[in-house]
Image (cartoon, rainbow, N blue to C red; front, side, top):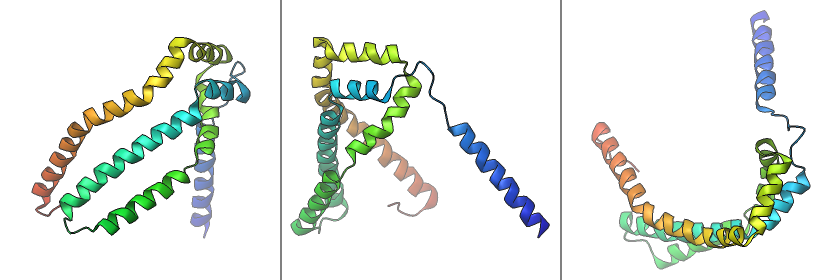
Length: 170
C-alpha cells in the first residue's frame, strides 16, 4: 500500500511538472487578444480558413474517391454520394471560430505587440492583400503539384511494409 501511495505521489508530481513546463507565459510586450484579432480580421483569416478548408475537402474527396474506386471497384454511386454528404456535414460543422481563438495565445507567445502591428500594417497594404488573395490558389496548385510525389512515397512505403511482413497493408 505504501508503494502504491508513493507511486501516486510521484505521478502527481510528474504531471504538475509537465503542466508547468507546457504552460508558457505570455510576455509583457505581447500583443493583446484584440491586437491579434485585428490581425486576423485584416488577414481575413475566417474567410481564408473557410476557403482553404473548402479546397482541402474538395481535393480530399476527389482523392478519396479515386483511391476507393481503385481498391473497391464495386463501390456504388449511392455509397459515394453518402460519403460526399458526410464530408459536407463535417465541413459545415468545422469549428473555425474556436480554432482562431485557440491560435490567439500562440500568436501572443511568438510575436510582440509591435510585430503584430507590423504584420497588420503589411497585410493591410496592397502587397499584403494580394498575398492573402493569391495564397489559396497557390496552396491548391502546390497541393495538386506535390500530391503525386506524396502518393508515390506512401505507396512505396506500403509496398516495402508488405514485403517485410509478407501481408498486404491496408
